[in-house]
Length: 164
Image 1 (cartoon, rainbow, N blue to C red):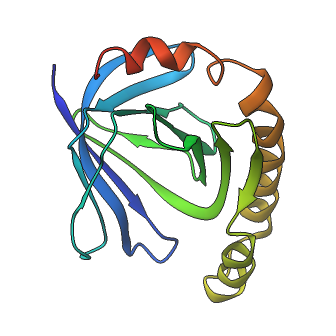
Image 2 (cartoon, rainbow, N blue to C red):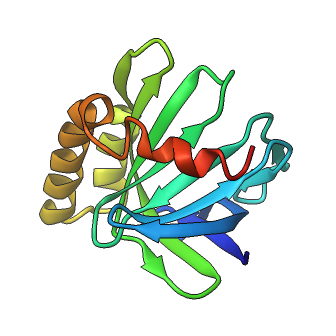
């Protein structure tokens, strides 16, 4: 299996979270990448962070989000970032992080995070009206979908089994 570089940027193109992950496959939901426990990620040029749990990530084609699925015992089961549609190449996936996050905890609690950052960046970076509207619509859809629709229910577990 090949390794793929994951690169999130902010709207001003500044480097955000980035890491290497293993290509696991593609299905009707998008491209799946995974990383075993002990893998590392980094925000910008800050110190590297070691991930204590295995995780997989979904990169849908043509959608305005990405979704991270953590193995147990991590209390955050699903962490979905609202982003611009992912750009794909053979060894890199990249997108713009639009601040809003939908988080599902293991206890079933779902909430939206970073709405304040989204509001600030609309002004700071001059998000176009279409970007704001699509980000909000995607966020609102995800709040429900992470608890009621695939691949958020069981599909991701088949990919997580590949990196445990």
